[in-house]
Length: 264
Image: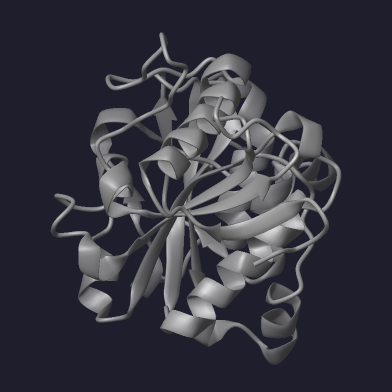
């Protein structure tokens, strides 16, 4: 669908579209944030992982940019419907979080990830278009629980203590949705007592898109995950559409978050 004179929002249709999405991910997650991975192709500048073939890739395409050079995709969101997880060998997030509580829920699940916007399009309408497309995708297919890792840049836990503690004390998921970070890189989030958290400092340290999920009633799992390969500290965001108020649902379908990275 055309969202303005130059931008088109759609699902990736072929291998070229996927490669263009992977090129944008390389620009953001590898070149900007210093990430890496087993399948990252530095020669072709593509950020690839084994889950890509199983996901839908919501892409924002700028018709003014060079499609032959894979430079036309300026926004991306990676989406895995729960019914495809078995074929993919599980959810991507399972490498970081124990998701068994979600599996037992019997709810219709959608995993989100690899959300990013080209630097030239931050501060504009790009993220709004991606969010509107995500809302349509969720509502059209009847997904009930959305989840996925969201990243803080860096692995200095002392520097992240305020925002992590704030999330733990104020936005911890209810028991029936409380995924837990896997033991290998588990990091406690309650590093500061609730009464000692500096709310202003904490909010300043939380990436904009995490704040956006929180405004919709989203919550976080138990514990953070330290990802040294990606140079990030991750939390798992969970959003139950059935628990969203009418106000939140209306907000969700027309939401305009700030243009920052959502996570992996």
